Amino acid sequence: MDQIRVHGGRPLHGRLPISGAKNAALPLMAAGLLSAEPVRLANVPRLADIASMANLLRQHGVRIDRADGPDGGGDTLTLSAEEIVSTVAPYDLVRKMRASVLVLGPLLARFGEATVSLPGGCAIGNRPVDLHLKGLADLGAEVEIENGYIKASTPGGRLQGGRVAFPFVSVGATENLMMAAALAAGETELVNAAREPEIVDLARLLTAMGATIEGAGTDTVRIQGRETLSGAVHRVIPDRIETGTYAIAVGIAGGEVVLEGADGGLIASAVDTLADAGLRIEEVEGGLLVARGPDPVIGVDMMTEPYPGFPTDLQAQYMALMTVSRGASMITETIFENRFMHVPELGRMGANINVHHASAMVRGVPQLTGAPVMATDLRASVSLVLAGLAATGTTMVNRVYHLDRGYDRLVEKLSACGAAIERVPSERAAAEE
Ligand code: EPZ
Image (cartoon, rainbow, N blue to C red; front, side):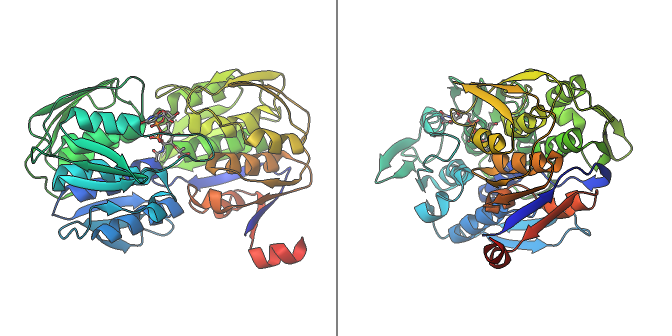
C-alpha cells in the first residue's frame, strides 16, 4: 500500500485551491436518480468516494459522462437516469462507502421499491440507519430488513407527504428524506433536520429540478413533492472540511496561504475557534487568507456539534494542532462514539493526550517527532499528515487509501506551498521498509 512521507519543520506559503465538497457531491449524485432527464454537476472533486458512488449508480443503470474540469479544477459529471435496470444496491458496493445508503430515498420515491444493503458500521462507529428507515415509513413506505438488506416498497403506489420528526440530528437521514419527499404526493415537513451547508446545496439542486423547498439550513424543512422532476445544472459548493483542514495545516506549520475558492462562512464556528487559538483568517479576493506568526497557537477547548457548531469532521485535525499548542485543550466528541483513533498514533509522535470517555485532554508539547504511523479512517489519516508537518524528522503515514477517499491531490497541494511531502508507491515503500 502507498505511503505518504512528510519531512516536518517547513512553513507553508502560497495559494492552495479548494475542491468541491465530497459530502455535497455524494447526495447530489444520488439525486440524479430522481429524474429521467440529465443532471449535470460541476466542480465535482476527484476522489475515491465519488468513484464508488459512480460505480453504484452505473450498476443501477445510470449513464455517467465525466468531463475534466479546468486545469486541476473539479470535474463535470452528467448523470442520465433515463433507463434504470435495477433497484438493488448490493452489499459488495455499499460496504465500501456508507453514503451508498443515499440511493434508498430516490429509488423508492421514483420506482416504488428499493433493496439496499445495510451499510454496516465503520471505524468511527456503529452508524445505524434507523432514522432513514423510520422517516421513509412516516411517508407511507413499507420497510423490512432481510438477510442484511433493507427492502422498501410503497404499497400505495407512491410515497405520501407527511411529518417526520427526527429524535436527533442526522445529515444522511435528512438528505434521504428530502430526496424522497421531492417525489412524494403533497407536503413533507422534516422537524429537527440537519442544517449543514451540504443540505442547503442539495435543496438548491432539488429546487432546480422542480421541487418546492422551504427552510433548508434551518431545523424545519418543508418540501412540496412533484409527480416528476426535471434535469438541472448545478455547481457543487466548496469543501468546508478541506478548507478547515488546510487552515489547520497553516496553524501547525506556520506561514501564510490563500485557500482559493474557500468560503469561510461555511465553517464560521471553526474559523472562530482557530482565530481564538491565534490564527489570522480573513476573506480576500477569491478565497480565504490564513496566516500564523512565529509563535505556536494557544490551547482552546472545543466540542463537536451538528452544524453550525464545530464540525466533527475537523476534530482529528484540530487535535493535531492542539498537540503543539502553548497550553492545553479539552476536546469533546459528541457525534460519533469512536472517533479518537488518531490519539495513539499522535502519541507515538510525542503528543500528550489523555482520553476520558468522549473527551480528550491535550497538553501542548514543544515538539513532535516524526514516526511511522497508521491511518485508520479518513480524517484521522489527514491529522497524522498535519502532525508530520510540525514534527522534527520524517513521518511515514501508512494506509493512505483512507486519504484518497476525501482529499483531492493533497500531496500536490501541500508541496506546492512548500511542504516536504511525497507519496511513496507501495512497491518502493515495501522495498524501503
Ligand atoms: C455525514 O455522515 C457525513 N458523511 C460525515 O462525514 C459526517 O461526519 C456526519 O454527516 C456528521 O456531520 C457524508 O455526508 C457522506 P449522521 P452521516 O447521520 O450522514 C447517528 C467524513 O469524514 N445516526 O449525521 O452518516 C450516527 O451513528 C464523514 O466525510 C443514527 O444513530 O452522519 C452518528 O453517531 C464521516 N441513526 C450521528 O447519528 C441514523 O439513522 C450523526 O450521523 C443516522 C445516524
